[in-house]
Length: 265
Picture 1 (cartoon, helix red, strand yellow):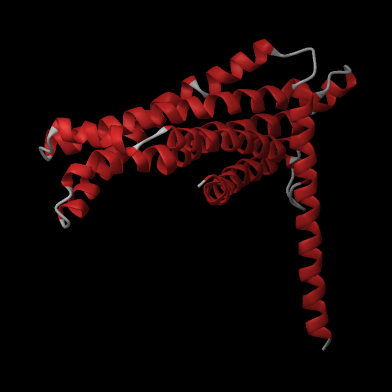
Picture 2 (cartoon, rainbow, N blue to C red):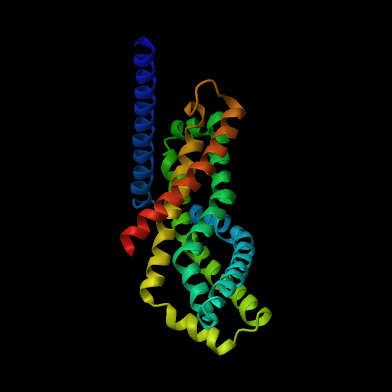
């Protein structure tokens, strides 16, 4: 009986700790978003973060997109061929990219490339006491460090998603029309007929939330790296925060994708 009570106590402690972390993270992101909308606006820092998050992610996003589109074209062709519906290939590729794969895969790429760097940067500043120095100089650390990252991520991720969609469709065109010899006019007409404004709105709404979560969660993990895990300090805490930021951001993106899809359908 005592063993059962002990296990229940451990489980309850874990749940309470998880809820505490969730509440603290929510307050952290909410505060950073509120500070983002109050003057003085850190335009230069936002532009710097846009370059880092957006411009430097174009290559990896485009590379992922072209092969995703090619795989979609290849798999879609052989699936549709079973029903003699190869002419619908363009629409299948376009809808898959615009509604689901474009937003999710581009967000995952940004989380892996930029999110990890955000966590590592803030973690290094935390253990070297640079964040405490900002407090000493009466500079709000969240407004100076976190808010520009969130603002830039909210802007950059939808733009990267749009690039992903365009490049992915080019990859699908390459496979479907050039390699598998689907009629070009039929492919493009199917793509145009299958997509409407609602699909585009859904596909471009998701990245707004993904961008918020990537920057918010990654910054939170780095900002509090010194207290994330008991017994982990110094450079080891930065490593833990970086890994944790990528994993949590990726999982949240997938869960949030399902929730938004259920709401926006």
